[in-house]
Image (tube, rainbow, N blue to C red):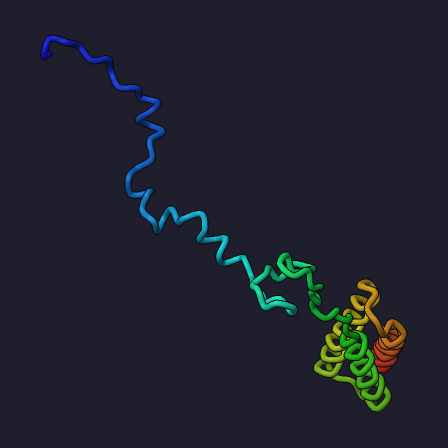
Length: 150
């Protein structure tokens, strides 16, 4: 036996071999580990059997399941744009002498107001008329404040 020559080990197999520490469960979780996390189960409204939350009907009794309540798009962006623009307009009409702090604050608030109105219009959210009025009042307020600085 000692006289037999063994072929050299295959270097490609040795390079591609997985080190033993990578086979530890911490580094290599079981395939079902991720499946349990992403799977949500609910109870059937007809028979109470556990079914997947996206099932439209129960596979056991055939009862139709109700989906989640439809979400309505909110009009908060348009409303905030309108309220900010009203504050801007009232402030710009009252200001006689405009200093740097008032000017910077007015421009920042105007950008926020116009930005929220523009995003609300772009996303086609409800309250588009409020967004248009908010943008218009914001531009008017900025023109008034800018005219007072001259």
